[in-house]
Structure formats: C-alpha cells, structure tokens
Length: 527
Image (cartoon, rainbow, N blue to C red; front, side, top):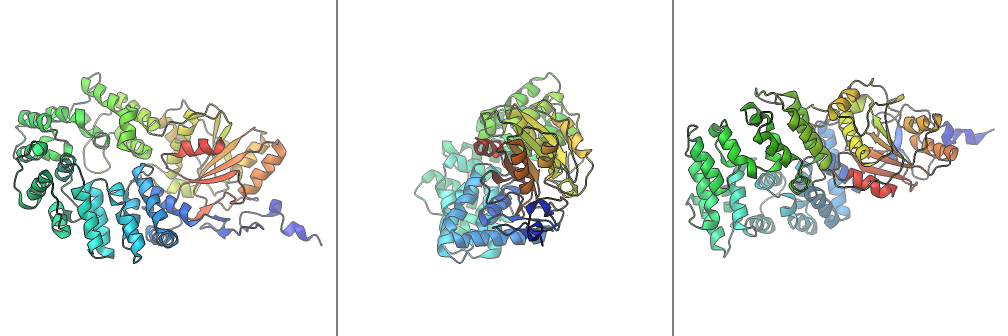
C-alpha cells in the first residue's frame, strides 16, 4: 500500500490539515491554517480593532476573544504587553486609538500589581489628549475602583504637563464619556507647587479666570463663548490673539468664512481633514482661491503629517467622503474641489513612513473574496478589499517592479499600478466578482505563467478553504520550479488568530494590515 499518498502535502486540500511539525487549526470558514501567537494577535487587535466583527464572527464574540488575548499576554509578560500597547498607539500605527485605550484599561485593571503599575506608567503615552483619558476612565469605571496608585497616575497626567498646553487641552476637550475635568480633578485630588497650574485647576473646579499671561488662552476662550453669530470680526480677532482652535469656537460662529480663515493657520491636521466639507460648503475653498492653496499646502506637508500621527486609512476615508460631496451623518453637502481631492490622495501616500525601494520583483495579491468584500473598514465607506488595494498601491509607488492581481477561487491581473488614481483603483476593486477563498492562487498563477517573483504579498483575512493545495505548499512548488527563493508576506486584514504563513519557514512573514509602517516592514523583510 502507498501510505505516503495520504500524507503528501501535494495531495492535501485546504479543507484538511497538513501533516506538519506545527499542527494547523481550523479557521472560521472550514479551511486549515496556522494559528498566530498571542503577541501577533495582540498587535492585530490594537491595529485592526474588531468594530463590526467580521464576515464569520460577530463583534461581541470577537471583542471577548481579543480581550482574553490581552489578559493572556498580561499574564505572560505585563511590561511587554503595556509597552506594545504604548508603542503602537504612540507611533500612530493604528487608524483609531480605541483598541489601545481599551487594552491599556484591561491591563490597568489587572489584579496583578505589576501589570497595573506597568499600564498606569504608560497612561500619558496612550491617552495623549483628554478625550483619550476620559475614555480610559469610563472603561476602568466598569472594571476597577480608584485606588491610591490609580489616583496618583491620573493626577500625574495633569500636574506634569506644560501649563499652556494643558490649558489648550482642557478648554478644547471639555467633556467626553460622562466625565469632565472638574469631575476628574476632584476624584484624584491633584496637588502641585506650580502656581500657574494651580490657577488653571482653580478655573476648572471653581470657574475663576486666571490672570497669568501663560493662561491667556483661557481668557480668550471665555470671551468667545459670549459672542453671537453676528460678531464674526470679534471672533476672528480673539482666535488670532489668543491662539484659539476649532473646538474653542461656538457652533453659531462656524458658518463664517472669516472665522474659518482665522482658524486655518493653526488648525490641527485631523480637524482640517474632518472639516474640509464644511469649509467647501461655506465658500472658503473656491477654485483658485488662497484658501484652497493654503489647505493643499498643509495637507501635503510631510513634516506636519508625520507629526500629527494621522493614519493613512483616516486620510483615505476622508478623501472618499469629501469626493462624494456629502457627510456620513447630517445633511451637509458640497461641491468637492479637485485640487483638494488630489491633495488628499498625495497626503495618503505621504503619510506612510519613508521607505527606500528594494528593487525586488513584487507580486501584490488582493483577496477579493466574499468575506473581504463584505467586511468594511469604517462607517461602511470602504470594504477591506478596497482598503487593501490602497495599501498595496502605497507599496507599488515605492517599488519599481510590481504586479497587482485580485483573487478569490480564481485569479486575474488588475488594471492597477503606481500611476492609477485612487478613485479608479477603488472602482476596479468594487467591480470584481466575489467568490470563495483560495490563497494558493497567487503562487499557482505565477507558476502557470512562469513569472519571476522575489516576494509575494498577499492581503487577506486568512479565511481560505477552497484550494486543492495549501498556500505554503504552492510557494514551495514555485520555488522548486522557478529556482527562485521567493518570500511570502501575509498581510492579515482581520483581528482573528489565523495565518497562511508557515511558522517553520523563515521565508514567510505574517504582518498586520492597515499598519502605517507596512511598507517599511515589507522592505525590511525583503532586504
């Protein structure tokens, strides 16, 4: 009897596990893949989150599973866990900070004293603005009490900040998630020897206006709150004189182009991108106007982009909404400026970290199967497949030798390249015919067409099941046939525990999708 035919990887379909030294697990679609370790799952959760769940798993189930991973990592190494959370948040690698705040709150609420201390020591790195702090406190309120160490950590968040910067933040973000600064200061009993900070705390808790020059912003904020919509000239003067920003200005004054003109020079990048529709609707961003020039110059400023930590996906979503000409919520409509749309597209690519090209031959394969096309990045604006296409285009713009394909249970080249504009790319991805998932298709396609590929980059949710051989086996067959020691990078697009990358093969890498450092990671691995 020929026993080996029952174990051979060449005859093992994706619906059954490979005979491997590292056992495979069944994914949510019934295929067999490898399970990533706890630390990789932690990174996936922090970067991808699990809002809305996935095609196969509900949001509640996925959230509970990832919370369990945070707890397991905390048990293994609390300091490493807290540092990973802080670094991913601090470096702006995730589109949203919510998952990092949630994870930090879980670690801070651990019964392990060392873990709680590790999290609280990194509070100011993850919760950089009051909104983050209030969100953290609202989660902790459900999980723990206000012990001495906790009060001291929250008090330190306030008393070790620059008075001018703190005045800016406490007037800009006044209340969120059921907390105000007055509530927090009274709960944590802040004490400091700094007279300027004490004046600011007195203003927060008692409403007494400070007289220090360093806190003149507080005085300007108090004055602008008393103005009505007819006082736009006075409002513009106060904004310039006191350095006020958008959140300091009452909504009644935000219909004035004079007010927006005064805000524009110091408007933070995130606020600028979020309010492009509003500025266009009130006539500030007319074609050939100085307002358009100023906005486009700001959007394409690489230094400001990197300093703001704004994530590429946030810019991509903003571009999609702005070009559409109407908001996701509300009735505001506008006629999009082509100059601004082009500037947003340039900002998207500029927001990735600078990477030198490797010159290697890249085949970028986008999973356009049903599960990738059903899952959405944010607010239902873009599917994961569309988001993956834009991430792939960022690599294509860096690397001179790339070929982009789309696959499900079949594969075909996509008419997308480094010079394709984003609108066209998104349309071409959305028109792809969806089907079941076979992640071996990119390697089989390269073999069938005798393509010389140095690195396969597969963007997928790892829910593969439909192939007659496993992706890792297809890669090994490709290497033997073509005589090329090709590498495989698997870009995971969902916060699940699965990967098609063989952990025993050093030529395969599993990484997290929508990571702002993705092109840099790919470059480092390819060498």
